Image 1: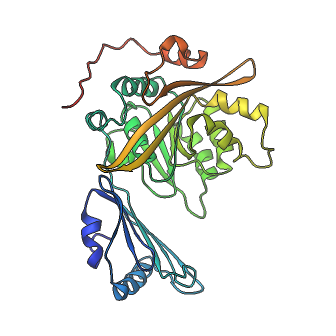
Image 2: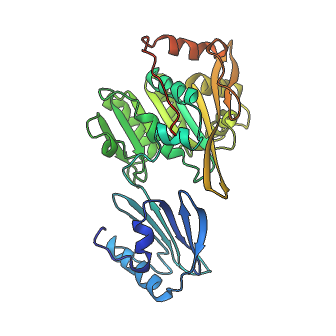
Image 3: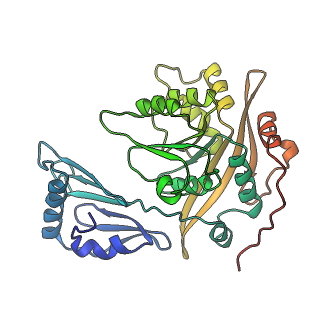
Amino acid sequence: MSEFNFGPLTPYVEDENITDINYNGHQLWIDHLHKGRYCEPFDEEEFIQQFCYKIANYVNCSFNFSSPLVEAETCDLRISIVHDSIARSGHSISIRKTPAIMRLSEKQMLKEKYTTASVLAFLERAIKAHCNIMIAGLPGVGKTELVKYLTSFIPAWERVITIEDTLELRYHDIHPNKDCVAFKINAGFTYVDAIKASLRQRPNWILVSEVRSHEVVHLLESISTGTNLISTIHADDAAKIPKRILHMFPNVEIYNEVLLNSIHEALDLGIYIESRISEQGVVRTLKQIVAFDSINNQAMTTELYHVGGELADETLYPPKLIRKFKSLKPQPVRKRRIAK
């Protein structure tokens, strides 16, 4: 769709600092990496009408009262349009950018106080120790970007299978020399299908863009085979991740101790990130890290880090995490300097 004419939306599409473009029928809202979320003057009703139908034609589908939804995707854009017969304020358009870049770097995270040097060193060790990690946060806080950063520590020879309905992780593009298979979900190939198929592909890691529903059952089963996992979930606290997952199980009462223990056994770490708007723009923070374990059939959650405090000493780690970290070969001390 690079040849497609975005008209008055072109400056926003081309601006690398803009992540999302949303039109609600009468207002244009922009999500900017530094400025946050703001409304731009936009009086282009005729263009919007033409744009919606051009996108529908591009993907060869109808756009009307009977077919009110249009979904289009390119290598770096995801476009969703809702007809005004459903969106009564007018045609609704959402354009999400999915570039094949890593927006997070060690230098940047330290400079912007996203987290501390000791936390970054811990996360690198966690990946090398093959920890199963779930990243929590509200929509739009940057969970996928943290996944991208963490995957940079996966060795090239370890096979990675990504499972997404929209290609956002872009592992195979960011790391072209690493062993990766990218599964894309569609109507005939579900998350469950993808997870089952991935286990026959000898993966070391499964990366799922977001855990949403019953597929979590098969995902946890894959961990029990020795496959490692990194994924994201909507939650407002890292410690709540196991219960959020439990609620996704089909036909299970709100509290099931056996399943809760199984979840704690499968997952090693939970991370919570948040973002807020300040006078300086968007401030993203890694706020919390917890470790999960099950000891004598008792689910345990240990907080290892909370923003403003220090990372817990390794002697305070739960037994499962200690075992994983001990499996690592001694690494030479790597000095980390805070960027000036």
